Length: 326
View 1 (spheres, rainbow, N blue to C red):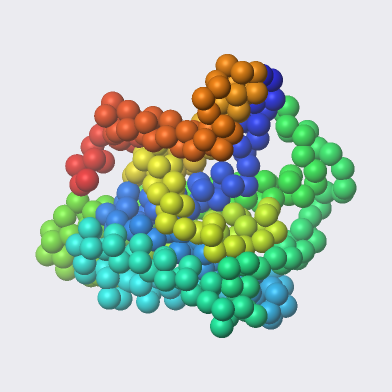
View 2 (cartoon, rainbow, N blue to C red; view 1 turned 135 degrees about the vertical axis):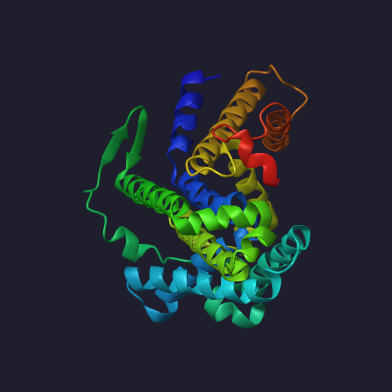
């Protein structure tokens, strides 16, 4: 068992573009649920809208990178409005059911055979990342970040991904410190009280849904760029559940909590996978195959999340006072 290699792989997950995408999408959930009380279980749908919006704009319309990103963001705004108009007056549990269904509808639409020329159906879309990596200022070569070695493409997507995460955290932090953010927190605690003060609760909820959805669409773009392909299977319901795991790990009503939670989530997955595979390789574990070990790591993360909810339900960075609304 190569402990050093296992630790290097875990460090790689700490700063990977996938972790950055999860952090950004979980930050959108913090706007939805942590600050607004909107139980959105369809964040995977917003990620899919962003990824497909970017890929289709690039492949079908030959849109340049800024235009493709803008189209993806506008598509998520439209999706949020269409989703929010009939649902934002629903109670939290009903809203959760509707948002799960909406995300699944998006996934099934892009797999429709009639849209194969546009969405690629079940095979998805590929070869749309050229415009992004064409802006890469780093020459071809190998770059070392601590113990981690990466090529110029890996370095570029990491820098862009985490820069977007930092900017998004700053924007959300400023919004939540503003009068708008204080109204949003009031809606989370008691929307009837806020409504009695003359505030349009429905409009504030819609704005929060749009902002969190835009963050989800940006996460979808970052999530798909390193892979060079967007496939509908990557945006199933379990993706939203993983994002909620990240949110709960870090803290629901915090700005940095989703980022820390995403880092913990992927580092723990990497460490448990490396240790289990290593134990199987040296014969210390004989009753598991590699595929079974891959499933066991999710069980271990689930157990850890259960223990966290028992002993620290507010998350790593959360405040117990923020739990009053839950």
